[in-house]
Structure formats: C-alpha cells, structure tokens
Length: 70
Image 1 (cartoon, one colour):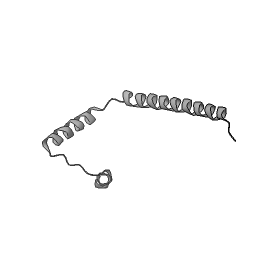
Image 2 (tube, one colour):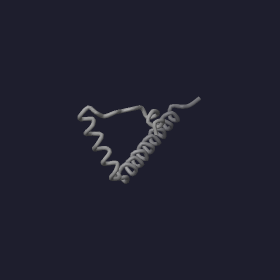
Image 3 (cartoon, one colour):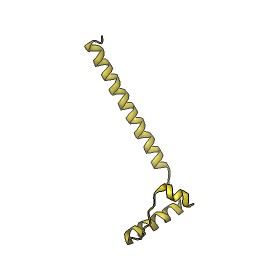
Image 4 (tube, helix red, strand yellow):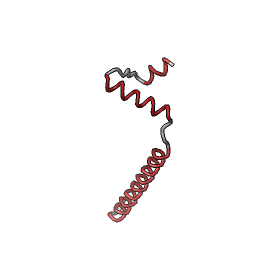
C-alpha cells in the first residue's frame, strides 16, 4: 500500500515531468516554425489562394483526392 508521503512525492515528480515535456514541446515548435522561411513559389501560391478565397473562386478538395489527381 502506498503512503500519503509517497503519493505526494509521486505527484510532484509527475508534475515536474509534465513541465519538462511542455518546455521541450514549446522549444521544438519554436525552432521548427521560426527556422523555415517560405519559398518564393509558396508565397506566390498562398497569395493566389487568398485572392481566390476572397473572390469565392477557390477550389478546395480533400487531400486524398488531390493526391489521386496528380
């Protein structure tokens, strides 16, 4: 049987591990997002999509269907 002190220590250890994992996740996300600048053709396609969306002419299709079409 687990004592009250052991449960408290276990709870503190789990809380510390959760904080460490959260910090690592934030660090990885920050590094992955901030280091990749979009390529010129990606910027151009994004701007074209935004314009089509604004005009109501954007043709959206499910990812699976797009892969089959190529």
